[in-house]
Image 1: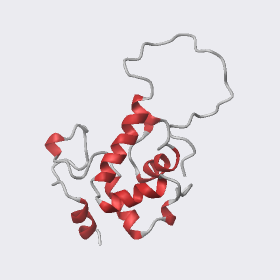
Image 2 (image 1 turned 135 degrees about the vertical axis):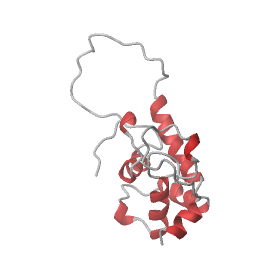
Image 3 (image 1 turned 90 degrees about the vertical axis):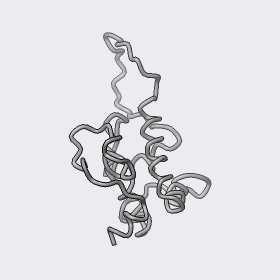
Length: 139
């Protein structure tokens, strides 16, 4: 179980995705450290504040959208008035485990490798697949 995940450390493992779904859909939490001293220098950052956080959440939502109705149901569990809290992998139905498995990983499973920007990808050369193909193959 992950205690805290920095946005730049997200590698889209199933544990990373569950942590983001449980903690970050309404904004990335800050980690309390107790250290309050001001930094010595301030580096210029070319990115907008919270850009990485927004990109991680958006990527997960795009991957969930590729799962159709199953992805929408999975997302609904973590959002809205009836939102469940602290869901663990053991709590997931078989359908949701399939969704989590499909959206996990360094790159999108539906994307052809020649469009992928991940260097040294272990999936290089494999054919893309849809969510339905993924579910049928992993039964």
